[in-house]
Length: 130
Image (cartoon, rainbow, N blue to C red):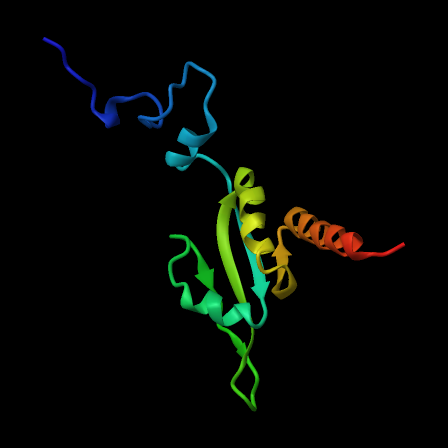
């Protein structure tokens, strides 16, 4: 008779997507929550800030900060969006932020902020006329 082990009987942190005897593929490690998540914080400005506030569930672990509003008009001046991401997702996340390149700055992490600034500079350089 074959008996299957319960998860509690495994000598390691069991994850059905990972074969610990082989080189580990990237995606399944993420499924098992084993990748380091780095908080990414972006500050959005008008007109995108209001749109960001409307999207309650873009990511299951996102946090949307309290918006800063103009005291006279009530217009939203800025809102911070924070989401924990594995480093390997940074480039994909940047593609999303770059859709709003003139209305967003990346606060942290520094390496992502530098990539964002570099992309903005490359865009400016394309418009320069010699």
